[in-house]
Image (cartoon, rainbow over all chains, first blue to last red; front, top):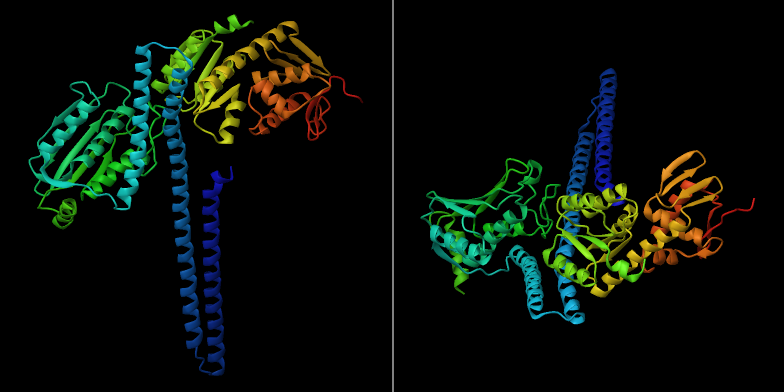
Length: 329
Length: 240
């Protein structure tokens, strides 16, 4: 319970401290000005030349120190807020990852127990083994996603980038994903053409599209439909990935690429997920020198992810050459 | 109800993970239970409204409506139907929340098949114990209070209210053991079928609620007495 109110408590404390600081500043100015006016009057009355130079210097130093205190408090407050946000996301991550790790583990455990204690037919055994394999794959994917994002963030990941014609390589990757997850014909519609060169790591882009497709699958309440549009301009290659899922609200727009964040509302058709998918997508795009933005007309109105990649060698040549160079080792 | 009757029990399984649900469905069916499986909270409520069940096995993280909300809905409509919660959450407050909403038992993931089957059997047995106990004495009076164990309705002085199934079972157990000390651990094991290594705070919360219902002065309880370091004792006729 205490945790729930800790942010409001911190905000109130911060406001009170700032009010105290500025009240002191106000009082101090009022006092200084009043004293100065009195001294000036006395000076005028008795024809004494009163020098306030020293006092003004002290006053100015005092002001600077008070403002510094106030700024210091502001910085500490901002850091605390960030810390609070991170803790909240971390809790979210723990809850999601606990669910994501324990559920397939439970399933594997259940089938192992079943195979141990029950006498079952060969066909049933094979079916149960298939379930266990699926769950083991799921665990593997989750662990890989956690490791991948950690490596990407620490820039320790070594991709193998090459220059490809965007149209060709992206269509190839999407086709591979369609085959791999056995999507029905017509699920993904590709429009537009992107006849420009981009520096791309094929395996990273496979992870990227896999995550976007998985996302669309998880959050689609109706039949899964995905529209991908590709275009090239002289400097950038634009890929728009549009799904017809539950979308997200304006408030959530800023947060959906945050690590561990998950869209959560009553129309959510699937509760699975670690909150790492879109964070990973963003890191991959960033690594390739690109940008990603998400749009949604609102809840239940689908989502569009717009990816912009630099065209080689017209844009971000230095960064892309660095990627190509590091890929040759 | 004998073992054979228990085996014919109807179970509603609410689990969104296909592979886990298939395994549970297979094993419960092998035990002779009749099982209906639904994948989300919405369908669980529809299914619950459509026909009577002897037990609901309920996951917490469910699409559309989570397990806590489903349990709340079920409890409002039917105080008698037992609920076994399956959860990946191990935090004490989650477990306590589930039990307080009205779950009869919970199992944290990952669990062993034998444990699940034993708990299912335990819950169904307790349900049958409660039903037979109610059939013999459906109403019970003490002081100004009267409890109807069949429909959980109560009267205390001029107030009328309804107990939850779990509250009624706690009262039933205390009354059956009247004038004897019942430990918190015993209550957890007998009423909730939970091993006593978990927090006994749940029991204290239930007792506090029961005292609010039945005691003239909750600070000086006369019917449900606390016995220091030992547990609780129900006294039908408190000495003046």
